[in-house]
Length: 363
Image (tube, rainbow, N blue to C red):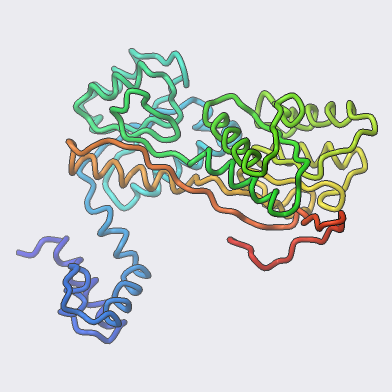
C-alpha cells in the first residue's frame, strides 16, 4: 500500500511534468539530482518546483518532532513591546505550519534567567526540542547544551561554542549602512544608537570599521548619540537636546540611526527645528521594516533579516535532529539595502541631488 508521502510525491512529479511538458521520468531524475538530463530540462523543472513550493518541502522534509518550546524575553510575545522578536516568533510558527508540531512558549529574562523554570520546561516529556531567542544568560546555554534534546539559538551566542546559532550579521550590517552614506558623499555623519545589547555593539563596530576604511577618525563623544531604548520619544528628546547644544555650529549632513522608530524620533527632532529631510539633512535607518515612510519621507535603510531567522532556525533544528553529532556553528544572515528618498547624494562642491528611483533593491 502506498504511503501518503509517496503518493504526494508522485502527484507533484505529475503536476510538474504537466506544466513543463516533460516526461515524469525526466522530472523525477532532475529532482533526484541525476546527471543524465539536459540543462534546459533541469532549469524548467527546478523553476516549476520552486513555484509550487516543492523545493521548500524537500529542504525541510518531515519534522522529526511533535513539540517545540521557544524561550524568549517576555517583551517578545507582545508586538507593541518588541516588534522584531514578535515577528521572529511568528516566522517560526509559519515555518512549522506545514508540520504537525505543537509550538509552546516560555518567557525568560535575557540575563539572570530563571534556571529552575528552564529546567522544568526542558524536562517535560512533551518537550522534544527548544529554541532560545535573545537569551544571553551563559548558565542557560550550558544547561541547554547538556540536555539530550536539540536546541538552536536565535540572535544570541553560546560563548562555549556548544550550541548552533543563527543571527543577523550585525557587524557587517552596520558597516554596509555607513559605507553607503560615504558612497553618497557624506563625511560628517552623526550616529544614533541604542547599545543595550552586544548585538548593537557589533553594529557600532562595523560602523567604525567603515570610518577607518575612509581614513576618518570616529570619536564617541563627537560622532555618537546613545539612546536608552529604541523608542521614538526618547530618541527625539536625545537628538533634540544634541541639536540645541550645537548653537550655530555646522551640523552633520546625515544621521545614521539604529532603528525605524529611532529614525522617526530623529526626523521629528530635525523637523521641529526647521530642518528638512532629506533637503537639509539625510537620515538612514538600520531596520527598514516597520516604518517604510516617516512623515511622508520614504526611508533609506539596511533591512535586518527578521522573518528569515525563524525559517532558517527551523531548518537548522531539523538538521540537528538528522545529524545530532554534526559540528556546531553560527549562521550569520546578511542585511539588504533598500534605497529610498531619505538620503541625498552630496556632489563635489556641495551640490546636492536627490536619489534616483533606480537601484531600489526591494518593494
